[in-house]
Amino acid sequence: MQQEYKNKNVVVTGGFSGIGKAVATAYAQEGANVFLIDANPAVAETANAIAAQTQAKVIALHCDISVESCVNEAFSTIDAIDIFIANAGIEAATPIDEPMAAGLANFRKIMDVNITGTFLTLASARKKMSAGASIVITSSIWGKTAVPDFSAYNASKHANLGLMRTLAKELGPQGIRVNAICPGWVKTGPAMESLKIMAGEKGCSEESLLKRLSEEQCFGDVQSPEDVALSYLMLTSRYAINVTGQAINADRGALLV
Ligand SMILES: NC(=O)c1ccc[n+]([C@@H]2O[C@H](COP(=O)([O-])OP(=O)(O)OC[C@H]3O[C@@H](n4cnc5c(N)ncnc54)[C@H](O)[C@@H]3O)[C@@H](O)[C@H]2O)c1
Image (cartoon, rainbow, N blue to C red; front, side, top):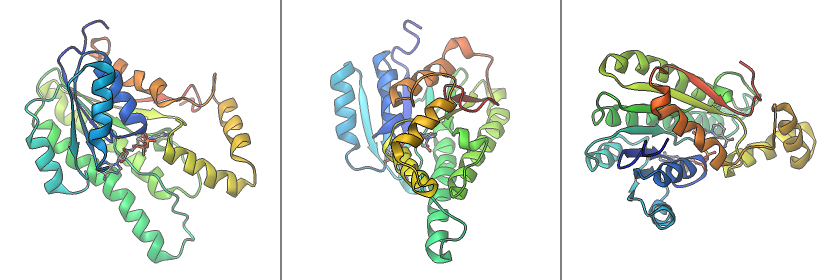
């Protein structure tokens, strides 16, 4: 993959932390110019840290992807995009039996960020992309299956795959590929928070649940963000030029579909 990403413009939403930060770092290590879009006001600190680590050009754009004006403003500062990683997302439990007012507010918030926000950024990014460009949306293996108590999150990740497949059809004739990565469990803040909730429901410790989840994979422990980041590079590389409209599991074989 030598020189594959040298001087390419790569935009990553949710680049402040977790998977997004690791993906941004991986492209920066390959010589890309990276733009981090994130609602966390400290996103500039992540950008500076990645720039110091990789010597790449890394620009932070503070933006809530669910707010149209904010998204328009952020993308207006970017000239051209070679690779767009629609990764920002939130995760929380929304049990069906939660009192409706709080439950509905959580449900709407997750839909707002994970679906509407993703759509808004795709619409803006797409205007800066031309033939040969590539989009990857971060869905989840929960976008292909389901776990109890996470109805909004599961539904939003299924919707991400619907968006991906639709845009693959819409943008394919213009030479733009659109795919999704479906990570399995990745050690990040929100994932470990969900693990805690699930362990509580099952009446077991977080450690024992983590061990069980690792054993359900074909190999290894639960992945790090740096592990999963490599799958994004694979999917946007020239080795995948005929791959579009696909939802690729990066889950160490946890879900064999
Ligand atoms: N960690 C996992 O196990 C796992 C598994 C499957 C899918 N995912 C998906 O991976 C993506 C990244 O999650 P993560 O686990 O790295 O969590 P994370 O919280 O570390 O990363 C999410 C990032 O998105 C940002 N963000 C949240 N709301 C935003 C908004 N409205 N506008 C802009 N930025 C916003 C956050 O500030 C954060 O930097 C999410 O889409 C998540 O659903 C994670």
